[in-house]
Each structure stands twice: as structure tokens, then as C-alpha cells.
Length: 265
Image 1 (cartoon, helix red, strand yellow):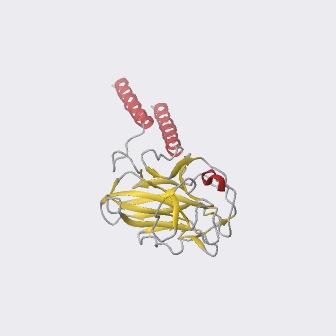
Image 2: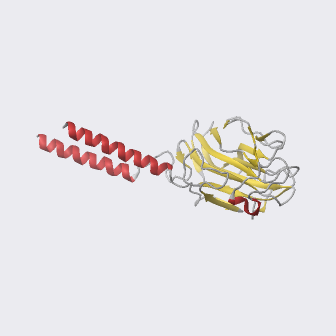
Image 3: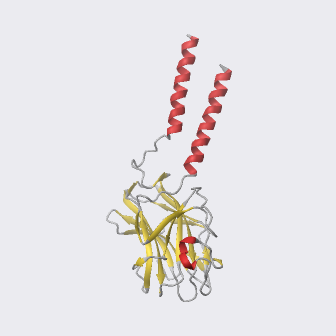
């Protein structure tokens, strides 16, 4: 009996550890997201590492090969990209969280910017989740002269200057490794957490835009977009299905217990 218990404990631990590793090392899935412009996924690339969330690939959008866009509508926006998640349900008290990293080769008076918006079920803005903007003289997040994040948003860190330099990152296209003026670089990974104060149906949108010209590109890496601990886009909101390996282990455990009871009768 003692040996059987040890075997079950070890088998269960190994199975759960294997499941956790598989779950956390999968790539960020944007296959059901709506991209306008230039979007993709990438492993660690140049100056941009994998995120603390632990996916094997993060999502990204870039102004390189982008499309005409109004961005947040502050004026002088030219080309960029947006990506919008599938609609998801949220309950009061749920938390929406994700990680992001703003990357720019454009400085000086050409202040590109990036953002995240919570959209309602009609895809209209419901909350500003963060802004990031090239800023040679201060913090890049939150972005200067851009809308403030919603009061229910917590950023970690709350204010972030740029890690200066000419960032090496493939999504910047021909601008990778280049820099115009002061303010180029990347923020490194920042976490954004938003707490819902009401039930509803929503979507998450990331965007990045060139400002005042179409040269020297900027981009945004993002990862770990979850609502109440589950991936955005899960088919059954509020339900977390058992992974196949865990379900198989539990089935085997039940069978072994049955066998043990049969032999002790």
C-alpha cells in the first residue's frame, strides 16, 4: 500500500509538472485575432526577450509595412497597425492582464506611439489600458500628450523611461538597428492589469502608429493576455478544461484505486 501511494504521488507530480511546462511554453496564439497592418509572432529576437509570462513566442505589431490609421486621433498619425482580440465575457471583479514592450527607432520630433484599448461589444472604446510614446526627456510609459490610463488600470512598473539605443528587432524591418534622434530604444516588459467594475462583453486592442512621417519604424510586443486567469479566446469563458495529460492521469488514478480496492476485498 505504501509503495502504491508513493508511485501515485510521484506520477501525479511529474504529470502536473509536465502539463505546467507545456502550458507555459506554448506560443502566444493570435490566429483568431483581427490584424490590420503588420502583425505576427516571434521568439526572443535581438534586444527583445521573451516575456515574463513564459510563452515560447510573443505577439507583435509594427508600423513597418503598416496601413493608414487614425490611431488615437491626436493628429498627424500616418501609418501603423492594430490587432484586436475575439470578443470575451467578463464579470465584475475579473482581472484582464497582459505584458507589453514598446520598441522604437524614431526619436526627436517624430514621436511614434502605441496603445491598448478595452473595447465594448460594439468595438467602441471602453477603457484606455496604457499608452507608450517616444519621449527623449522623460517617461515613455505613460505616453506624453496621450490619454491617461483608466483609473482601474495598474501598470508595473507604473512609469517607465526608455532603455536607450538603436534597437535590434526584426519586426522593425529595415529600421532594425537604426535610430533617428534621442528617444529610440525599448521599454522592456511591463505588466498591465485592469479590474472590471461591471459585467459585459469586451475585446482587447493593441495599436502602434507612425507620427508626423512614415520613416523609422516602431512596434509593440505583447504576451499573456488573460481574463480571470484564462486565455482570451477560450471557447468556454469561466470554465478551465482539464489538460489531456492531467485528465489521462486522473483516469489512471481512478483505475488503480479500483484495482487496489478489488485486491483488498
